[in-house]
Image 1 (cartoon, rainbow over the protein chains, first blue to last red):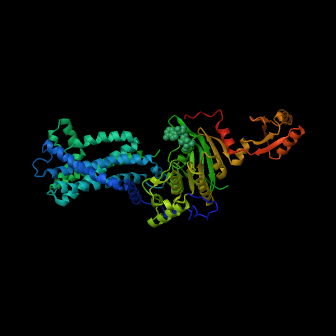
Image 2: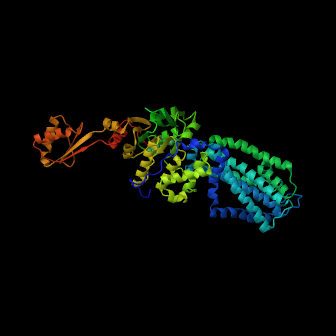
Image 3: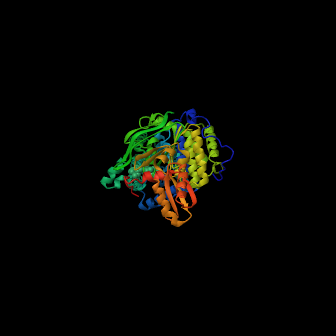
Length: 281
Length: 317
Ligand SMILES: Nc1ncnc2c1ncn2[C@@H]1O[C@H](COP(=O)(O)OP(=O)(O)OP(=O)(O)O)[C@@H](O)[C@H]1O
Ligand SMILES: [Mg+2]
């Protein structure tokens, strides 16, 4: 109120119609989720953030590309005629989407800290829609990065696999789904812990083993036994196998179903935990 | 009396060993403004959080709009608005988007949401800042947007936790006018505040909390009458008359206290009419009066008296 004049012209009333919300009649889960996702992606749409988000996959491509080439050509699965980059791109995709999923926990902590969620919790909306929106916002960011990986790989490394555009799109979608399902681990952790520092430590602690104890970069045959056991149970390994097959133009329904199945189990376990622990105070 | 829109009965809330609320009861009829006063940590915010379904009470019952805050939380949420102690608006969105988002979540169409947002921006004089991200708002602008956001659905009950803290005097008066208008339109308001002037001006009823318990309850006039004193302050023309003046008043049964200045004394009286008595006694005693002042008790007196009772458990800083 820059200038308040007690004698000013009368302002509109606080309640133009009696209880407007009764007239509106509430919203459904879809509307809520979409509206809240729109809110959550907003910080990602700032020009600076968009640029950095785009550069991240570029750095990964260049770094992993260089490092792994120096280690020897262990990336392409045995007996396949995939080019070096065609073997590497799915691995970069899956780590990109898992990293984006891990970000969802931090996003939730930030929301809790700046008190916006308090308002949502006093409103007649589903609390689950707030979490769902959180996961979808980070999935949207992940999709943007996955497209960046494919485009940059094609432009810089001549990524043009036998599976063609269909194989690449399939890989992107599968990777997106796996990353989204994994985001629920971190959303559940955030909802339970409610502490950003602890969450960040756990996130780092989880993501590194998850990424490296997999067949994404090194074939498990060359690992010590205990690590090989982890790598072979790792959802990332399943996803990576399925994606490589798609990129190679040899999509396998079994691999696809296994990957999707593992992801679904993950969501089925973590989402209810997140929903039950999700409180603002 | 109108039916209570907010009713708390013996509400208890413990956080582990900390007992934040120790059996608090209050009742707010429709269209009424109820004030909640108390020192830092008295439990005001905790009570507001329980009534707005953010916290579950450890004991007792609370009903808002006739619904139980634990068993029927969903119905309660349909009829309330909360402006918390700390602004809960999205900093990344602009003012209009914040209000429109709330409207969308309440089921408004895009067009309705925009119309309602504009209406409230106008009401809170934020139209000029409508398209700026809230990140760039001043504290007072955020506060106003926050209040506006809690009014989007036209709630029948609104909770305002220290709504004018951090506002400049003009903005504060603006918020007061809005609150008064809300009540006139039939909204029931529960307001916490540290400003006694604010409670005095706005509230029909006041509950004073201290360390989680109700220490006083009533309308401002009752509270003042109960605790505060009407005082007459007399400044004497001659300093040496002080002793005689005090003696004369005490002989008439009036307890007079010389003030530090040495030229003035104050004495409690029952009503303004007693001023004449004091004047007559003093002139009979041949003491000359230079100045005479009469003061009504203020809520400050009430507040300070009630919240500084020796029984009060000290609150850790
Ligand atoms: N989540 C919590 N965990 C533990 N103790 C809490 C919690 N929330 C509040 N308390 C305690 O409950 C008591 C009441 O706090 P509350 O926030 O209700 O006070 P208040 O009257 O709103 O104070 P202020 O005027 O400072 O806002 C305080 O002693 C506080 O430390
Ligand atoms: Mg408080």
